[in-house]
Length: 298
Image (cartoon, rainbow, N blue to C red):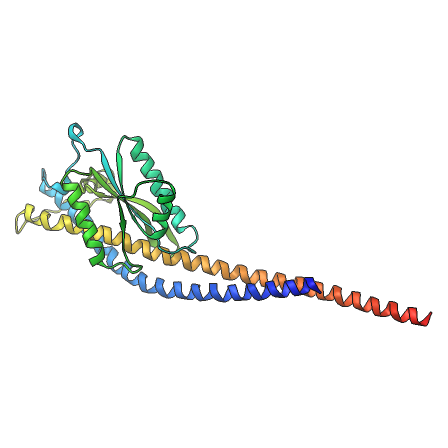
């Protein structure tokens, strides 16, 4: 009887957990649908701006701009700023693990090259991880679960100021890139210098436009670049936060669905165990009754 009661208590606990995970799955699904519209709506703009800036800089020729500069080996500061975007909450499967693992691997690679690291961390999970690793965090980022451009703008301006003043040589962003609802990849994107856009276009000539476009500039190219280059950095950083948020909702939705399915399987298994225990108990009671009857006849 004690075993059957224990199984009943476990079944009740599993059913309660299933209700919670099912509710969390529904909430994550609703948040994902809302976040997906924002991410899908802004991504083509962000990609097109980066493509336009790369092509514009290539057409202008020998253009000089603080955000396009390449570090001079003779007077390098040898410092890299790394922005790590994690989540504030757990129960999202391997989401935070993949992002932090990718970011840590890149940080170790930069340090192996002799660079010092300025670490900017967003999300409680990332802050807790690097605090446990005893790694100094330069700045803890306060960004809401639904990122707004007004929240990301000060960070983008701060990173551009650090780069143009020569305090850092490069800026990288470690985040979960949202490719589709079924594919999310942990990546480290080079945010600055923007000269990396030109280098990437040169390495992938098959992606370039077959016929070179000819531009007539109005106003002059320098004024255009002064406006477009900071816009490219701000939009790219904001898009990274948007991708990370949408990927987080997908990961939590999948994790909670798996937890709900596992709860269903466990509930069925416990029900079968309870039926066996109850059947064994009834058989034992019948045997005792029959034994008592036979004893009374004797």
